Length: 324
View (cartoon, rainbow, N blue to C red):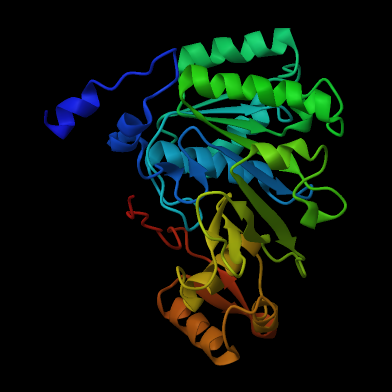
């Protein structure tokens, strides 16, 4: 019998049991497929955690858009999927404005807000199941965890009720789940609350903010703390908040592009010293970048040796065409 035909005939016995030899031969159980390469496997679980006001929800919006559009998320290639993003802190008007502000489309993404859904209660679980039935998502994003719990996030038994329900969703809908979570006082402990979260997820992604100086744009560092299916990177990656999404600092943007991002985001006269403080390149490269932006008509020099962004055209278009 040809392998392809043989694999099509493999069926579980007892609902979920496979003969071991057939299980090994079946290609569908081979290499782990990812919605976000290395970070979010299909039928997997990712927890992204950060201190308050570090851009977690912006990252969640960006993650949903990138999976729905099959665009690179931060530096990681994605595979297209339907995404259901449930927000438990922001009202509909605020969420609407945030999505609109990026100027981008959100194909294959469904969003909803609720202040009352609790995934560790029967009523809340029924509400989520109704949403899952309507959307049939490949990826479910819950933002943030503490608002979706009726019980105590520090009590293992309370958190386990929620996680058992999320496991049920994974089996029912063959989906992956992303949890957006707050960091504790010690950010190295992978998020606040019960340690059962550490046992449950496939990936922990830590986000820390870089202290801003003189109203400089928000910057963050992103470093996976645990990846079940990939090696850990040695160093965190830095990202700049521009146009309501995060973009990589360094290799994916030239010094000139980063200078322009800073000037455009501040929307006021900026001194070269302020740009030097961002440590995006040498003093010479920053000055040369400013000169080029002036020649291109995007920047003008104002009094006191300061410079201002004046262009109304997009600063840079990031093409994310890497696919898995």
